[in-house]
Image 1: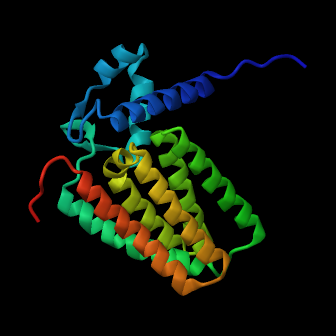
Image 2 (image 1 turned 90 degrees about the horizontal axis):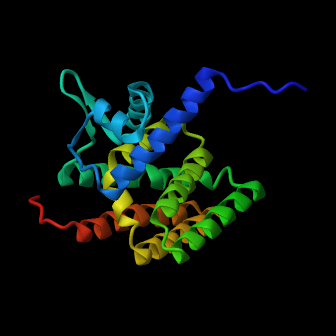
Length: 226
């Protein structure tokens, strides 16, 4: 069989994804701060590419809620006030609790294997003190529960809340103690869903999100005015 080289569009898509991953890393690491404007030209020069892949990568990260585009002002890192963060957290807690309750109705052994794998991988990330990997697995764990809820509108609303909170929540998982505490709570949620106990699942899920909010507030470097 003759080798068919990848098309230019395929190569461009791969390059855009590579650039998006690097931009995400720079944002998560704090090199690019909330509110900071990003220059396509400067990023293209830094990454040794044309502006096209940079522009496509920015679209990807805007879809994830990490960047925001303002007409005539360009693209900047998403910025969210602490007050806004608290309000979004409280709404997120309600939707997640609802999803965990509904997940009890659709749980099966197939899902048990998925949960166990995610929990195990998150334990490994804790042991390695790998906050980036833990955070991505954490998103997958929550997404699985939203999928099991069977409510597409609830999942869409939850996804929107998660996007708004990315920059606050990602830094929280740089501490191994926070990761371990988070995953212990994950297991309680999973056990409640697996035992078909909707009330217990609701309580565990809501406590998990609100507990995360309280712990996150305690890590903020500057005092905030309510």
